[in-house]
Length: 349
Image 1 (tube, rainbow, N blue to C red):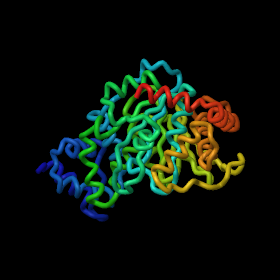
Image 2: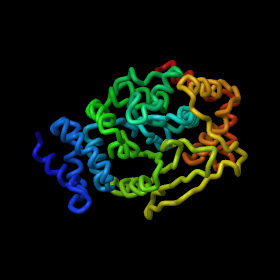
Image 3: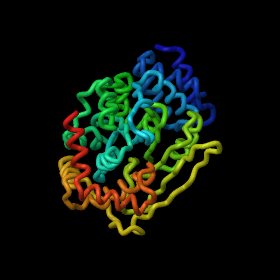
């Protein structure tokens, strides 16, 4: 048993009157001891549920990220043959259960337009046990679960796309996954994962969330980590996917000498999109819908694909305005650009 960890656990677990937040360095120590199994299973479980009840502070999240940066996998991006920042999507690791995702289609649109993308996550995971991104990519013919880190680096350099698969690339973090099921709740690690950046340099973090306080933690944690250029998305099921059925609440972090945060609202109805989201019936249904769109067929997922693809083409500097972004996304679908890119990617995967 770690006596150091025991004292940190007492700090956050003493209740509303005497409990306190950890400092950034203390949170880093606690995270390190959990990842390296220096804390006992009882201590780790108690810490995760106590932290969940208390809610993590930005300083604690920054400390957790510090250790993920130190112990986790890192991709080299400085020498990539792309002139756009590397987009890093932060989606919940436990997947989707209610709505069909379009993240793979958005990703294909970006990489086909010269915007490199890094994804990260694991397999089917508590507490939702939803459809994870890696499974959707497998259905499209790209199996990221078979790549080691060196292969992932090479894949990024050749295609503009990489997937950090936690069971392979960060087993220290993967061993904490069963605790999510055992405590029955997403621990603060799940919030931190939305901001985790497995590379540094010319990057564009995009983090999804459900509850407004989470976005506030994004802003403060990114500031502590020295990151001023980012995008926050109140997306479907906490993902980075915009909803067709409601006004999207989006945040833009602007870099420069005087960094600032800007709120942006996007009503899909103003651009003629149908105000409905496609209900997820099965993994097979989601993959079939995505495959159809990629091959140039129209189906009920088309509006979501164009809405998201067009928005991200604009936000990532490919399109000069939103309307042009939507037009470009539709053309890419019609002209088979995504099918071409997917064929290239799958042939190398």
